[in-house]
Length: 471
Image 1 (spheres, rainbow, N blue to C red):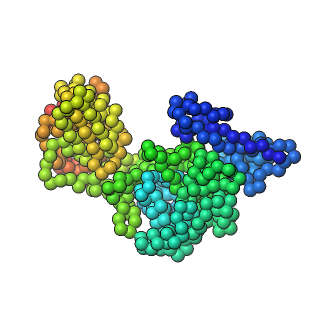
Image 2 (cartoon, rainbow, N blue to C red):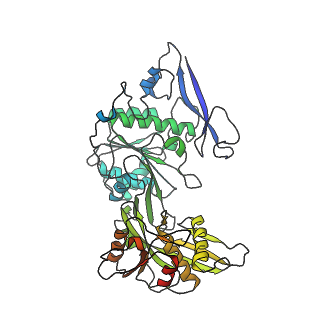
Image 3 (cartoon, rainbow, N blue to C red):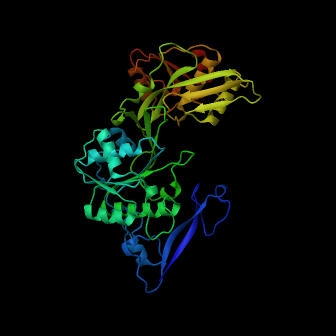
């Protein structure tokens, strides 16, 4: 006989408890604990679960059958110097931007989770990838949300090659694994993990227990057979992947496809990647024939109006391994409220409040009676501090109602004492700006090049007051 064990996991922070309680003591959120099955204790004389689907286990036999998230467990202790350093072979996903975010391509035996809002293009991106990969790789596309005819109609609408792609409409993990054992695919796509379920779990599909155990079983299969596993995941209301805390330890890469409903551009950003950097950004455009990769993002983010207006400025941000030129806009207006509003779209709102305080203290410009609105054009989220100086310059431009030159580009980090700090890859940022026709740049003194690009005037500053004078 086998005795099932259960625990309660917080869906917000992943903390685990032995019994249910109203408030999570880890993140202090209420009603976020859900029951999951954490393992099966195999009693003496009892055989382990068939197929190795069940998780956990107190005995070595159960653990061996499971193989862990890595697919296999070593029986002997090995010295680290004796571990093989052979390069894991990668192959292209057929999308250069997808490969960039993955760290160079798909790795056999890896598990990749792709999340995004409904309509972001997750299924479209993976269907395009699967159809193209199927021309030279054995691929199996499992759909749990759409019928086979719906997938076929979308592939026909997108004019994709459909020969060679194996399709399966199924939500049972046991059936999927049996089919995969028979077909032996090199690429396995699950759309989506929230619809999958294991027969021996009583909870409904989409619950924490089903999502965790289904993903674990599929990941073990991928590791054992060197199959690339691509999982589609839904997002919650706050924009995070549903159930990320119970999945993040077993998957190798977590990617998020973002894009506003009124914009045709989509950005793909890595949140976790065991085979590459997590700060890479892939840019796609949603067109009539599906998602099309944008190889020069700066060109689309610089589609500015011909008429000069105050509060508009171009900055250079660094995304992964390349610089991108993005326009930032600021609007200041007299506030009728006792507590003026601070609204930032695409930037951290707390950092905006801090920069306004620095502007008041070290720049001599008071904005405490102004509503401040900030927007990064194109729907891009800027996460690095190199945008600080450009944000303040745009704020000053709007405050004084003075348009800035169109050929001006700005970047630099602003400290609390008003100093302008250098940022990484300053030379590459300046070269990228020069390629797009910019002739003047305000940069930190530590990033000033000895030999600036031809036709580019560099203004090096180390204080905020110097930067405001240079405007």
